[in-house]
Image 1: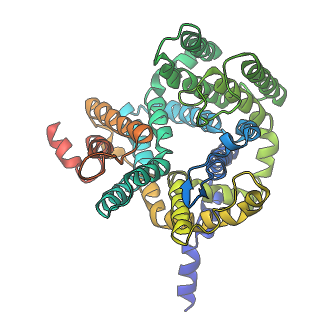
Image 2: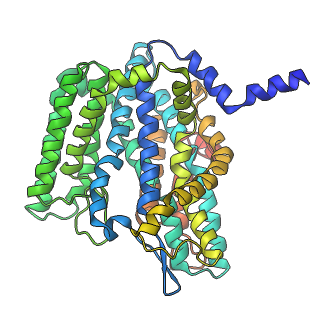
Image 3: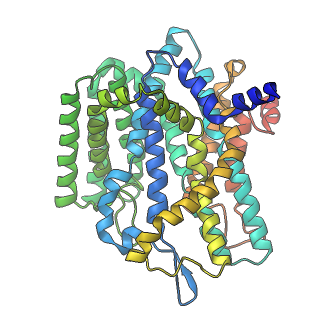
Length: 452
C-alpha cells in the first residue's frame, strides 16, 4: 500500500512540476518562463471575454464585446500580449541557436525539434474539428453554424504559422543582430513604417501583409537584445516602455489606426491582421514595461510554489492556447441545447458582467479535461530528436511551407466549407499533415522519407 501511495504521489502533476522546478539550473532566467505563461493566459482570458454570444428573438447572435462597448477597446492594450510572446521567443531562440553554433549542431536538427514541439499539439485539434465538421454536415446542422464554430475554435493557429516562419529564419536574424546590434531592429522598424505608408498613403493593396514579417521580426530582435543584457538596467527598459506608449498614443490619436489592438467587426482597419506600426509601438511599450519589472519578477520567482506553478503551466501552455476556444464553443453549445440558458443577458449589461465569473468557471471546467487528454501531444515533442539532424533541407522547407500554408488558410477561411458534399475543405486539413510527413513525424512520414 505504501508503495502504491508513493507511486501516486510521483504521478501527481504538482509533484512532478516541483521536481522539474528544483532541477532548473541556477542560471536559468525564470522570468522568461513566467512571461511565456503570462502572455498565453492573457490571450486566453481576452478571447473568453470579448466573445459575447447572446440570444435575440430566439436566435443566437455572435456578439463581439469590442464592437458593442467601444470603451473596452482600450483594454486590448493590456490583453494583446502576443508581442511579449515574440519577445520571449527571441530571447529563447538567441540562447539556443548560439548554443547550437558552439556545439557545431546543424540547422536541421535545431529547427526540426522546435517545429515538432509546436506542430505535434495542433494535429489532434485539426482531426477533432474535421470530424466535427464532417458529422455536423452529414447530420444536417446548418453549415454556417458549423463553419463559424470551426473557425472560432481554430483561430489560435494563425499565430503558429507566423511564429514558425520567424523561427525558421533565426540563423539570419541572429547573424544580423550579432553584426549590427540594435541597427538590425531599427532597420525592421523602418521597413514596417514604409509598408504602412504604402498602405495608407499610396493605397497599395495587400502590401500590408509584408508587415507580418517586419513587425514580428522586429519584436523578436528585441528578444536577442534582452538575452545579451541590453535592457539590464530597469531605468533604460522603462524609458523604452514610456517611449512606446507615447508613440502608440500619437499613432492612435493622429494616425489612421484604431484604438483596438485586435480586429473589431465592422472596423475598416485592423491593427493585428495584418499588424501595423501601432501594434509595433505597443510591442515596444510592453517590452520596456515588462523588462523594467524583471528584477522584481525574478525575486518573486525565487518562491518555490510560484516557480512550480510557472513550470506546471509551461508544460501545458500550448495545449491550453490551442484548445481554449474549443472549450468556449463546447460551453456555448451546451447552453444552446439547454434552451439558451445564460445567453439572455445583453452583452455589456450589468447582468452580463456579473455572470462573467460563472461563465469563466464553466470555460475552465470544459478546458481542463481537454488539457488532460491532449497535453501528452505537447509533451511528446520535447524528447531528444538528434536522429533527425540529417533531415534534408528541402524536406524541412517543403514541410514548413505546407504546415504554415495550412495553418494560415485555417485561420483565414476555416476548414469548414459552405459548399461541397463533405462540408470540409479537405485540402486545408491535409496541408499540415503533409507538412508533418515531410518533416519526419506523423503517420505518413515514411512515405516522404522514401522520396529522399
